[in-house]
Image (cartoon, rainbow over all chains, first blue to last red; front, side):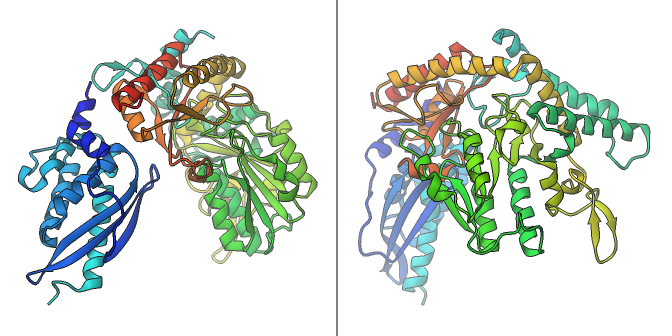
Length: 155
Length: 418
């Protein structure tokens, strides 16, 4: 049974009890992303704040229809990026993308990725990588739009 | 039919997956596995006869041309075509449908024959149960020509809603494009009856036979459709080759789709004239070895006998439908009895996403498809986001159906929904 390498308890926990789920007001940008292979979708909102002249993530809220991997991934994402400087959040998103592209789940950065290291097992299943990345792609898109809309940290 | 003997013809069925699990391949509606006979025919062609066709004046060229045109004759006989020139080879059925759509579009923009050219207000009728291949080309054609797209809806039990027949088929209808058998629901549509009604209002009919040709004998001379498309890789043949059948006089009227080598009669610098069908629609070097492989697949299915294939699948289908229905918390999409339906079984496991269902099954060696199966509008119409599909073919066994059923129970257990 290799299933446990993908469905680690931590992933199933996030799936059954997602963190930060539900769309909240106010927000600076909202995006909708779809996984065209299965029709899974996520609507995701980002709210930014000014943190000492730098943009930081005040809130990420989302509504998602999808499989355990995409749901758990969005839940982990909100835990990891909420409250972080946007630069730091983008580093985390990049590290998560890196982890998903490393077929063997090579040595993820625990400190940066926290619970997200549990997704290393997903990287072995190419068909599921898009599921894990769905929320993260939406987050990157929404954050870029929110930065443009608010102008925080631009000066 | 001796399934044990059939299975010996398919080398891939001997392999294990995900460690040491025997492969239980239930994804033949996606693509079928290939018998040794097909693999050998293609290898043999490359080893002994490879050359380009219709243009090489040497012995190999003659042999290759004979093999390619011989394949066309075999395919024509397999589907009951009056003449092999009514069979056009394409890359797959998507290209076959696009060929018809572009020929109609080209007839519309270049003042082609009246029975093909569309006028604004003309209508093309499809259905909610179509594969994207039989939806998107018509959407694009409508955008190019100003024609209007209309569609049959689907009843809750997964049949075409024929109560709208009179309302949908009118003197404005120019083309009706329908699946012969749904790739998700398995439902077999009454093409012959619908074609009669469509012809009565002057419309042409296209049947997407990708899911029917591999599993039942079809005879285009009585089916009633004017165009029939299918693909090689779902019928034990290779990828990269499909076919469009159409009546000769229609093919003669249709403007070409792709331009290039070998589809011409004469070329001047500013204009060209075209070869007669089917070559008018076969631009460039065609998939020659693939045609040889398809011919071997036709021979293989003919030798086994499509009646025997269908009978075998119907027995397995009944077993699968009955057993899956017995599991609580599982819903079958489409007809739940093995009547007027093929052997694709799509289902929803309550509380578990199809991707997760597929993952647990895959871990047990059971290969199925999860998602919308290129039939997104159908899933929306049925009020579900996606589904899991198990599809059967001649090489599947009772034990494999049982492995599916056990797997679904394991899915429920793993995700704690039963």
